[in-house]
Amino acid sequence: MALSRGELRFVGGVAAVCTLGAWAWWVEKGGGEEALRALARITARVGFLFFAGAFFGASLRRLRPHPVTHWLVAHRRMLGLSFATVHATHMAAIGALALQGAPLGVAPLSIGWLALLFVAIMAATSNDASQRWLGAAWGRLHTVGGYLVAYVFGLSFLSAAGQSIVAAGELALLGAGLFCRFSARGTPILVLGSCLSCCTVGAEPADRSAVPEHPSGSDAVIDQTHLEPDMAQAASADHPYGRAHPAAAPQLEQFAFLVGDFDCHERIRRESGAVLAFRARWRGRYILGGFGIQDEYWTARVFATSVRVFDPAADTWVVDFVRMPGYATSSWRGRQRGDRMVMRRPESEQDGPTFSHITADGFEWHSGGGDPSWTSSCRRRAVGEDGPNPR
Ligand code: HEM
Image 1: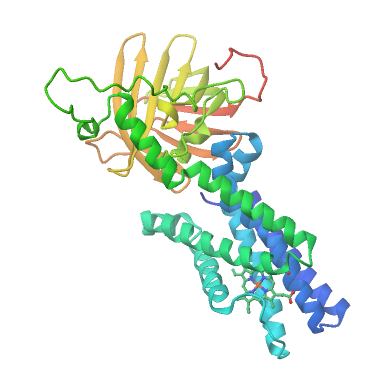
Image 2: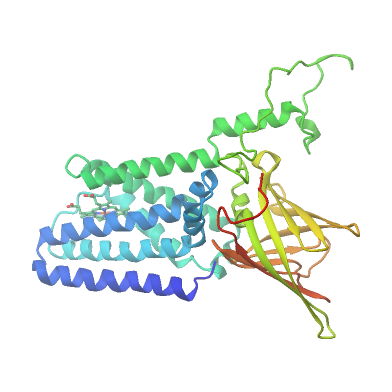
């Protein structure tokens, strides 16, 4: 997502604090080797906090949807760029150490430099244009780079943990973050487990080849009555909107901003210029065992719902919409484009319904081209605000 003005100010502020702080430190401490080493340590440790927010935020939100985790995801580009900025100061300190001929033996050199190269490439490609240009490779680049940086952090904290409680704490934080990331995305065992349950529980799989063959004859019975229905991701007291399945496609995150309750202001504008303004409620929740998202929409007169699933084979979102009364239904395909979610009719080249201005607090929606033009401006309801129980 493009950085907002506030986020740009934040990254600029981090850069200014780093530059001025490093300069003040340098002058204050006389620029000696120990001072530079301390500066390298401080910048690495502060940078780690930004890195952790950017790299683990989405997984944390999957495990625990909450305003804080929504915030982390909504601002992850800002956090990633702040990490790169702080790390530039880390490298400046190391450059100064090298100029003094001091030994640089702490970070395992080759992997440290490689990780650094990734940090630079990731920072340079943290913009919509690069994301569009690189397509699926963008995600792979940032995932591999992220794990590489996490690895170097792990090694550095491990070697310092004996002498520093802060390094030991950050090592524990890194371990917890990685654990969350693996749990949220599904370890190979979880993925295998979920595939097996898809194949065996009997929930109408799209791929018929996944249905187990009868051993012999059409009247043979496969007894799987010992398998419990998997309702782990269903709505509960702790998770009123359900949860994403750990083995769901990572792209499910892209629509997770819809999970929750929203108050919306609607405007329908006809080509004639006439405008109809009214209010609506929008509510999204995880469905299909945590592999999809359904949103419901209420106005005074019209009610609608959409089921949203990501089809990894076609690398596209599939959205099925139904409206009542006055039955109407439509099907859409879509993807994330920069900071927007853009849907089209399967056979069309024209953009249709589009979500934009997505933040932790709400979103905007537009019906796309054509007459009438319909817009929604939605604000997230605070937890506990009056309204029907989402369960
Ligand atoms: C993305 C890549 C890198 C990461 C994530 C990273 C991370 C860290 C961390 C976490 C520390 C603090 C360790 C502690 O708590 O004591 C540190 C310190 C340091 N790093 Fe890096 N580093 C990276 C790249 C490099 C490179 C390429 C060098 C060059 C040789 C380097 C040289 C140093 C030095 C000299 C220190 C100060 C250690 C001391 O004497 O206390 N780092 N780094």
